[in-house]
Amino acid sequence: MPLVIAVDGPAASGKGTIARALARHFGLPHMDTGLLYRAVALNLFRFGGDPANELEAVRACDLSAVSFEDDELRSEIVGSYASRISAYPAVRAHLLDRQRNFAAQAGGAVLDGRDIGTVIAPGASAKLFVTATPEVRARRRLAELTARGMNVHFDEILADIRARDERDAGREAAPLVQAEDAMLLDTSELDVAQAIAAAIALVERHLS
Image (tube, rainbow, N blue to C red; front, side, top):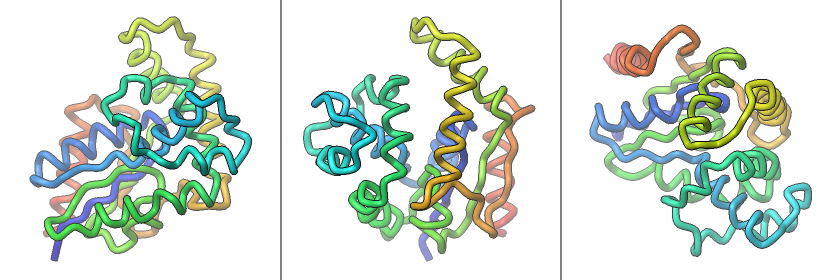
């Protein structure tokens, strides 16, 4: 039975860092599914498309020309576009098979996103729902963006975090929600090493 680990949670909760660490620990390939939506968003942004237009967002789903190493994928504008276009059922449908095929590979996999445990891999071997308070997540994002030399303000980032949470939880298509069988990990009071250690311990305990 392949080992599939689903890691879900809101923006800047630490789920990506935790998922990558779990992949290293268990020797599994990792997919950051949020990058797929950011890649569509980057396409849309580059050809001047409107994130409020579902048809234009769907046209941007051809990812053949996008490099997943592109630094612009991590920009705030692309993140904002991605949060908006990810609410479109047609966009999610276009990216569904790529994610499910990754999860279904024979050796197992780790995937992180917002609907992994509920939609992409509902039968995953272990599921984590990683969260933190909006204020903590905003401080983390502020530190990350400041380290990149960006001039950003805490209040703006906090407002954006809350807006993304509302969009993610409120959308009709695959809303952000903790799967019934997912283990909750609140990283608000944990540093990176502590969060990773807690995640590994939860998964190992569950598998045993």
